[in-house]
Amino acid sequence: MASTALGPPLLCIVDRAYRGAVEVQFFDTLYGLLDLHGQFERVDVVLRGAAVTMAVAEDTYRPSVRLGTMELDTLPDYRTSVRELVAEGCTVFVDEQALTALGFAPEQLVPGTVCISSTALARRWPEYDQVWFL
Amino acid sequence: MEAPTSHGAGTASYFLIESKGNWAGPNAGTFLMDAVALAEAGHRVRVFLVEDGVLSAAGEGAPELARLAEAKVEVYADDFSVAQRALTATALSPHVVLANMDTVAAALAEDDCRAVWH
Amino acid sequence: MKRRMWDLLLILTAPPHSGDVVTSALRLSQAVLDRGGSVRIWACGYSTMLTQDTFGDTKLPNTRNPKGHYPSPSAVIQRMIADSDGRFAWIGCTACSEERGAVHHVPQVRQRSPERLALTMAGARQTLYLGGA
Image (cartoon, rainbow over all chains, first blue to last red; front, side, top):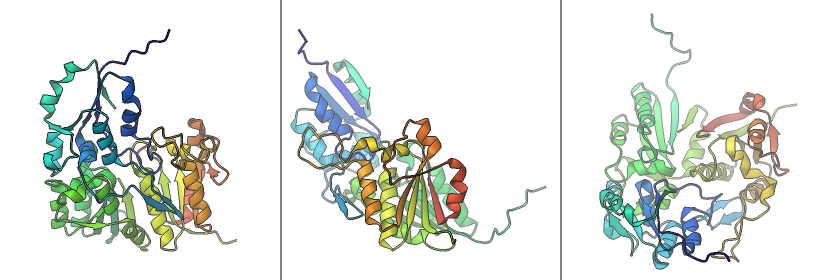
């Protein structure tokens, strides 16, 4: 009989951002996390480097581009995905050093995300069976 | 003996597009210094930051941007890339002007414009 | 016969799904088209995968929005070609295609050997090389 046990706790670190829009649409790294996290006991996410901007709350970006007569409005919607990860129980950590270096303050993050220093985060690795750099 | 310079050296018009920048990996700022060197040699130089290149204009801004300003280089940032990276929620470098792909298309249509993508 | 001159040739070498270069190339192409110009994209490296007929018209289903419409990359490119009145075209490099097993291009793609790259550049007023392969 197949095991229905959940997989081990994972810490998934995203340190490369913006890997395609038109060809990717919904199927980006954050979607992968949303789609798969239910299989695991726990999946937490770290946004590092330029990827911290995916958790900055804003209302200017429209995930849409006009190509020919087509309005392609299904480009990745990063902040919505981050909100969904938080809503579905994943802790989303945001690297504090990268955030401030880019001129943002922790208060500007999507609610429910956790701003944390790289050092403090690394000290949490033992809480997870696996640490994956996506 | 110095190597001969290429013929037709005169001044040229360069449109340099930076899609990476320092947040995408080491040495990416070197391309912006190429722009400075060209400008200091008397060429007309414009720089267009796109994709991760716009991150160079955020926060304290890459130091190369101040050098570009000193060298009278026009620096543009792609408005789509800026919005995509939530940079409208922070201040961009004062040396940068928001623009879009129309600016690039217009420049590439100029007769004497040489375009380089990094 | 007078050879046609294109306004812009984009040589696209960086792979899709690694950065936003494909989006930028298409956005720039659209800006050129909006100005009444013409543009060809020469796809090299893994960007040859973008126009495979194995994609079909749509991407795989979005499990979180199964009724959404998500056009495949090849469908997006085919649509741009169809909408452009002959001013937008796509070339697939035969060597890169073969190297990657990406040999089933949609019929709108013109396949050219890399030995014809210089000739293709000569047919454009401006060439921009998008590196990163």
